Length: 121
Image (cartoon, rainbow, N blue to C red; front, top):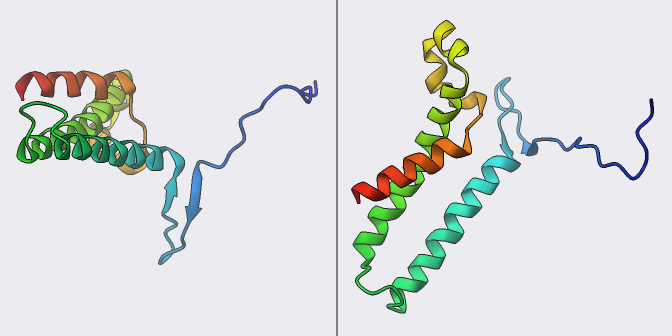
């Protein structure tokens, strides 16, 4: 059955661009670009807040520590969240945890790890 014209069908390429290097084809994915953009805009916003002294008691050193903790929490927690969603794959291949080149992260894992990290900060 044909899809009507007014229905959106997702068929976007996941890569913004790709480069062929020695038989391997790495590239920048839209998803990765969204992460980098989010981290960069967050860092810029808080640097401006520190510069204007908009957040009382927040120093440059504290902000650097906070940004590292948040980025690490999002990346590590997001990956662990995805791994916990796929226990069969983890049991069949224990190295599945570190196969980050295969992509896949889970929002709830990143959020949970950031919240845990913020409690420790």
